Image 1 (cartoon, rainbow, N blue to C red):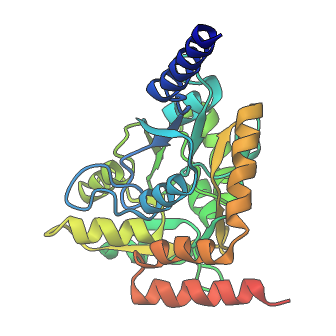
Image 2: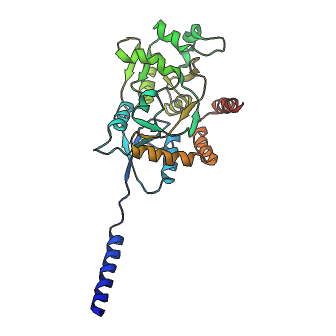
Image 3: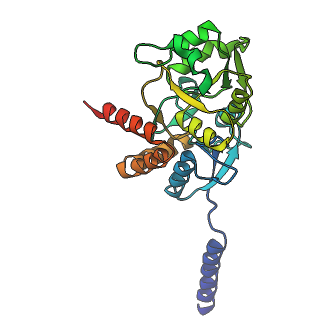
Length: 296
């Protein structure tokens, strides 16, 4: 009897020891990232200080039980990985993809965690008079007319989503990429590469966001001054959302994220990350648009 009891105790202890020696492996989550300054900064003195860097990191800290890993790629590559998975795994998420009907086919999107100023035109300050014929009554540029005229050469990033009606205007151009007045760029340097083409006179303008223009102007000391010009087709704030691959796992994970985003204090922190990248003029405009959007 004593021998059986001793053996039972040894076996139970052995099971307990094996449980402690072999902890459960936490599942991997592959986060799609890009060196897309100042949204995400993967290299250089401000590494990790982009507002999407900080937003993604904060969310990761609030999602225990995962091994968070990063996968770097340009806009096209990020879409491919979200759709096809990585090395047979489909636990893929992103803080960088705007919601579109196409992307809804392979990604599940959270509720908005942040609203941002819309995209517009980035051009050299000395070229601003050339855009005067395309202004509407409010002073915004009519991008549809600029594209139709083909008098100004535009540079855009392939597969990038600019948000709002701008993407609709680019769809027919992207279908063929044969229009000589449009330069398509696929590199991961995104706005930096197009900014360089603008400085060298290879394009007359590019599309982007006010935070991009401000960041690039600060970084490119000694270059020609640039400006951000709003477009009439994009005047409302755009919604930023987290997303995961459209799988049962992705749906469960986004449900967890949505539960976290129900906290207004958390959403306020994401907004703070964004506002720190705005200059005083953009910040005033941003807060005015936010206030207007909340009125009944």
